[in-house]
Length: 375
Image 1 (cartoon, rainbow, N blue to C red):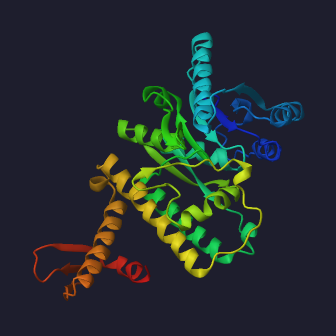
Image 2: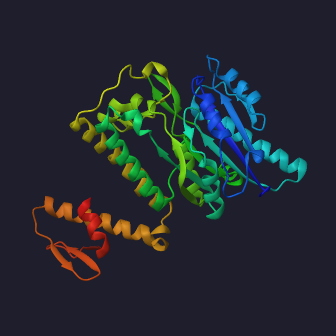
Image 3: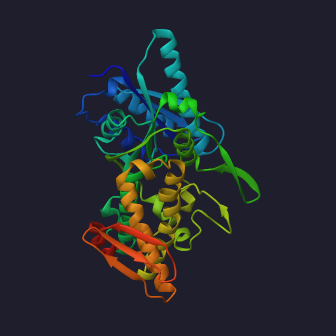
């Protein structure tokens, strides 16, 4: 067992009494096949964000039930999951520094963010930290899934959700991914170097409220500083389906993340925004939801990682091949729109496309042509 590895898991919560027990149980049931650490060098930090239900009592009950879990409960009075997450991660960093000063402790410390409504797989933590250690990552992201049975009566909706998550898995495997609160980890020293979580604000109904992109913005800071993002595809988090239900019609209408040039992040937690009954989308609405999702996805998950870390265009052959393929596809589409016939030059290794009125040439390795046709 590597005693030099220590983990802090931060859970911001607001009125999650119905879910907290199952979330804590999923942490208690974690398994550690890589033998790098276990629950004895892991702490859980719950940040109460002004709950009005009995969420705190549920945590205390679990504290008494699971004696080997090191559980801490703190408060954040500023309303908003961003402030609550920042309070918890700052608290974890401060505790680590006190241990270092008091005991001369040089443990490698990872601060993990998780959501209080999402269940984690039994190897979630082990896979995430193992990936960060073995790949020398500063920032680690998890893989997500929705329970298919939750959408058994909504196959059109689930089909589009599944497509989006498969795109996420593919691009994160290439670029390392960006964090969101459902599950990511950062090496403690890197957290301190970049200044931790930063709070931004947005105008909503005439008032300034927290802009709920703190996790995403934090990832940008880490990568821009030179931190290495890594993706752990076997570290699974089960997303609560209310995240879809709360934002569904905004996604269909293309305003889930803002409109008229103004980016708006919406809180998925308030119960009064839940749908009271569930029905499947029409095929056209499902396709529209997919269109807006992927339109939002590409700039944030493909273009932005490349801009933040341009070295991957030189050193990562998988990224180079993928971007070649994208350029090829875009070139053919633009040529078809211009109603000009492209000149295709095919050899045993490359497919080249040349505009008849331009010297521009795009190329992609021939073995990717099958994927291009399927797409």
